[in-house]
Length: 324
Image 1 (cartoon, rainbow, N blue to C red):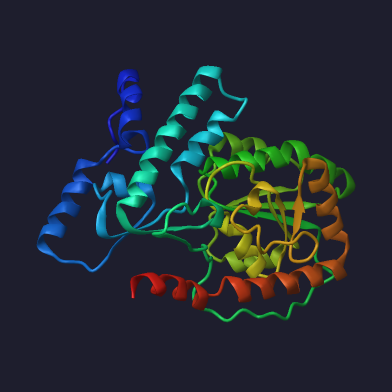
Image 2: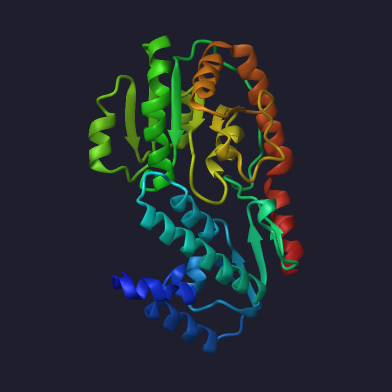
């Protein structure tokens, strides 16, 4: 159900309760409440703080929340953006402070919370649980690099999510033109549903850009692309697309922002390529497109670190250590 639009006064008073993060959904919370009255559960597991609030479950000795994106980070990123007015930035700065207060309170009042970034852990009843982009499958560490690949890049992600489409738009404006100048036959495949019609129209006019939208077989898209780019500069949580591309054995070039949550395993030049600015991003894309030996080395290392640090077995053990 879509919540009613709040007035300015209601938005202001929301700073003093969990509405600053998300409003309680009476329909959802009633269903949850009825189920809890009729049944006894060893554990109640919820993904996202926002969903816990909407369902009216913000405390409990058997409640586990897979936090993933911290609400305070999302609000703080807006507050730090110069593209918004001073008043809007101030509003979201205050909102982030209030969200932090209530997120901390919720985490203290539940059995356990999982977070995707070690630096976010504040309480004894919280632990690190990395997102993994694949089921219980064997990871092949042997990589064959086909030198006959076309010059091709790929971005994959939900394109209705602001950090994704803003990141790609920045890439197309600030990074891609220099790549196109050096590689006029470059192909840039953008995979993922939800891109706004106006952006589909404008981006499709750029040479080499292919808006794929939703695809049935992601593996086909990975196979068509030599390099995966992750130009993400905002958002919270961790970018699971980084791990997925590495698991597929692709050379992954990402912004330093996109390494958040994976800083302890990602090594520039060894298992990925990390760009600190747009100029460096251009240089590393061109390097990856032209150096097959480096690609093979990075691809092998990428698969190896995924196998060692992000296997299903490790994920399972992290969960069972808490609930069993």
